[in-house]
Image (cartoon, rainbow, N blue to C red; front, side, top):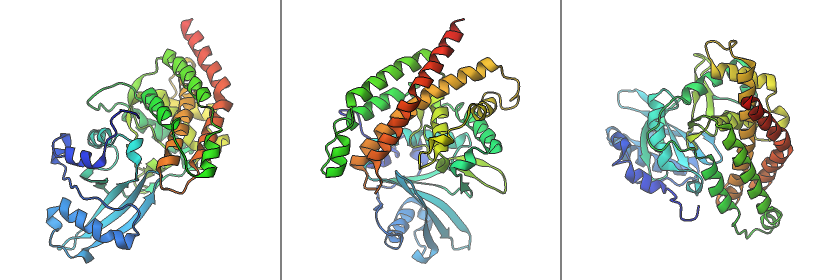
Amino acid sequence: MGAAKIWNAMEVAEGARHSVSSKIPSSLLTVDHSLSIPLMKPKIVELCKDLFNQWLDLDDSHFSVETVSGGITNLLLKVSVREDEGKNVNMTIRLYGPNTEYVINRERELQAIQYLSAAGFGAKLLGVFGNGMVQSFIDARTLTPSDMRNPKLAAEIAKQLRKFHQVEIPGSKEPQLWNDVLKFFRKASTLQFDDGEKKSKYETILFQEVHNEITALKELTNRLNAPVVFAHNDLLSGNLMLNEDTGKLYFIDFEYGSYNYRGFDLGNHFNEYAGYDCDYSLYPSKDEQFHFFRHYLEPDQSNELSEKDLEALYAETSSYMLASHLYWALWALIQAKMSPIDFDYISYFFLRYNEYKKQKENCFSLAKSSLKARAW
């Protein structure tokens, strides 16, 4: 991170008044992430009244608040407001986790949400505040890792991802992967831990080796010339929602979204088949990946692709799958220092880094074969 700009949520809320989101209501109020729901409710009511003037005179009994989910980096709340005419309005309030600005560029996220929402992705942005945002409520269930390998759902995710990658977001189109990985590396390799157990585990990490791996993989992937797209970068099951009645699939939570290499979004998504337990025996087989690729590359003519196209995308995705392991491994070390959440982030680093080392030889070999085939 060093001298790099770390975006403060308060600055973003203030900036929203003068940016593309100037039509979006904004408040400088903050809500303490650690409060219980009963203690949090008066703060949420105050926030809603500050953002949405039409509710200023409503009694607190007109508001109800419940937890939707507590992610690793944020807390999601459902807020229901009973208006005087008896009409119910449902919204989602997302509270950013403490210290998440070390790994998330909130200004980039707020800008992207508006364009992605206009293109039909995710919830609509209704308001921003000191440490979070208000969005429209999506009536759907969150997918599980096993849902993602369902062939019908996998095909739908692939088609949606193709459309997502076609959205144009204004600003720099520079892919962020290696900027982020190196930024994470600089931060992760200079941490100080007071906790004895964390300290002793952390001191076993060979950071020079990790840096060498980053350099080698960056050189290899650069030769692949993967297309640059606006990528989600965190397409795990928890960021996919399905309305069972209509069959509509939603992508949500764009906090890691940026311009990036196509193969990273694909490889990262496939890594998420392993679920929170990181059971990489669940990583999709080559046939399952080809099924996904067919629907991603040509959604309406999924059987008309050449084997060569599929093999090339398979090699690209496998290489960036390795990059995904390095990215989240280093991210986890920063979380181990910054996050108040009770999670063994240092062990998570080793889970991801060890899987990287296990898969490296095979993926490098695939990429080199693909480059050789291309040269013919």
